[in-house]
Length: 491
Image (cartoon, rainbow, N blue to C red):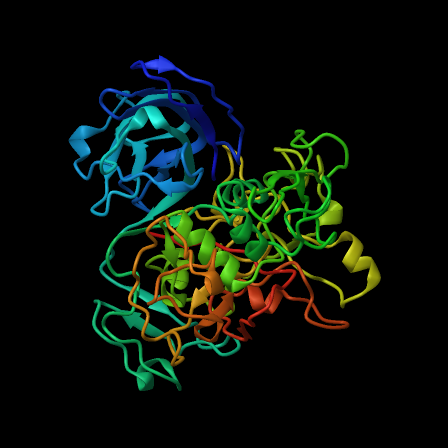
């Protein structure tokens, strides 16, 4: 998950600079310094429940680390390009740094097989900013927990029984999939992302703290587009509706339609960003435009619904009506039933296979008051297995329940042309679309589908558990903000 670390430049090299560190579901980045002579950033990183294994699921977890910089002249935050050569980045022996071909960040992960918590370990990254004048920049370092989804010999989509499911189909390569093979609608062209090659998925859904950090790097106009309430509203005003455990509020009002607001988490009214202010609760009340803007800003991309099924199921043969943990086991929890509410250790005291947050009653005033998302990764501990953690095959959490996973639909005209273009860390600055994703290949809501279910019930005397099934395709995505919409990206 995102953890931020602020630091300001000064005109000497390799000195520790002003830094703020917070926890976002276990990742912490601290002790940041910048060498203004070489453009190298050094920090310490730590996170919990890490692994790397060569046996099933034969993958590892990682942190996607990226940097934003602010020119002191115009005050705008931009994506800092990093060296595309892995050898230009260094770390302690426990970790390895992998550069990426577009230079928008790096993946930091275990260097060898093992499991457990990653202790504070030094990492140094080489920036590559054109015409850089590092002495005139401020910087922010971010990290998002990810899981590696490896290439496999084959994998399946569709369970043959869930509502709207694909016809059960085995994928053995990256070639196109005809409409007849997976059911009615468009085919999935060869360029449509199917998860065949190795990729990364966010381990958790976007948290409220992550969304706050996103907002705090935008201009006033972009903030206005990515929230409900005007950025110049009084301090302690909710940025979204005061429902569904959303504690994102204005901490310092913006002004003059030019100076952006400062946002914070304040689930329990009083001081901002206390330990029980819900920083690690999944962000909800978003629209697809909000989610796509966040993913573009973080240099990630939308996942496809075929990738969604691979993340959940891995190479295993589909089980009828299975949930993300691979069985039909199911144990309910709602936001009203968590312990340590709003805190970093929010969760459930009762261990059960398939514990999930989903709507169990119809819409009512009571549900409006007490329903909502819960902490991302709320079921996972150092001792939990896949079933007791309710984890997907490769270790991603809350792929069933909590908030909806908005994925690109393979069988709609708006979605099937998607080719998996990555975000570049920058958003549109055009007046009509200021603060939107500017990736032209990314679909609008008509090319999206909601997967994995959510905390809200769909109607009276019904529950949302059928929508949590891996293969359920019953819910389309509308254009406006919805209480149960959240987000997760891939790369």
